[in-house]
Amino acid sequence: MLALAGYPLGLEFLFLDPSPDACAAALGQHLCADYSDPGALARLCASAQVVTFEFENVPLAVAERVAARLPLHPGPLALRTGQDRLAEKKLFQRLKIPVPPFRPVDRREALDAALEAIGLPALLKTRRLGYDGKGQAVLHQREDLDQAWQAVRGQPSILERKVIFERELSCLAVRAGDGAVRYYQVVENTHRGGILRRSLPRADDPLQRRAEEYTGRVLEALSYVGVLAFEFFVVDGELLGNEIAPRVHNSGHWSIEGAETSQFENHLRAITGLPLGNTATRSVCAMFNCIDEAPPLAALAALAGVHPHLYGKLPKPGRKLGHITVTAADPAELEQRLTNLKAVAPELFP
Image (cartoon, rainbow, N blue to C red; front, side):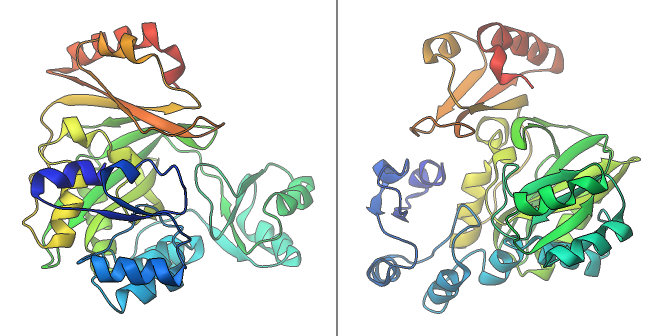
């Protein structure tokens, strides 16, 4: 989707991806190699003028090696922070952004003390490599401690109070190299099984300004360049920081049809030094993820205002195979179009 947004701007792409069936391969040169492969990195650095990443499991050492030779946006500091839940939480605390109570847990013995401080219910989360609900265990009673520790395989973790939230919101923003920042409408997200199922951009949300304030603090602290997503819990009408994603983000995919400038185009504008585009919404909309399987394309194509995006990925349990954005002129029309979509693809609806 970055490449699709970039070609109208005259940009060309080279992708370093270890998967032989990488879905972006058809849109540029594909270096099929491990991220740390010396030859592939040498070719990448010799061919590119600027480098970015679109998920945060790229090895930090590789990012630092690239950044020593080429502009890398966002930079290693953002990647280091986004890869470590403890580093994220400490950053939020330093920036005076409220977070749920938490404690670091590096060994089994520390889990008991952390539970005494945090209380039940709680979530044990690995510090690294957890996404879409992976690397997490819920504790409802003290007897769950051993099972939870086994679930995270004894990896360094944090124990966090499981909050009862009213909503989950994400704030997407883009920051340019000169410090200019633009924000998208906050998005209300619905998850199932730890995987994002639906995103609804919210016009005139009362928490828009506060979300922008907190996100702006993170952007500034990380000297960030590019698109960043900040995910929040809403508890008693206030925001609690959950986590950041230092990249274009699934909850912003609606912006392809729904905003004046998509998150993908704005990310490219930021990292290449072009002026940032307008982030205003141009329609009311909703976005749904296709998990495990995608609805029949012919059925989707017959529906007004329905925009399918299929990624060309092979199906497997829990995998996002595409997304669907529904656009409309007003909320009433959106509601009708969502009803039409639900009739042909009920599995999309949480």
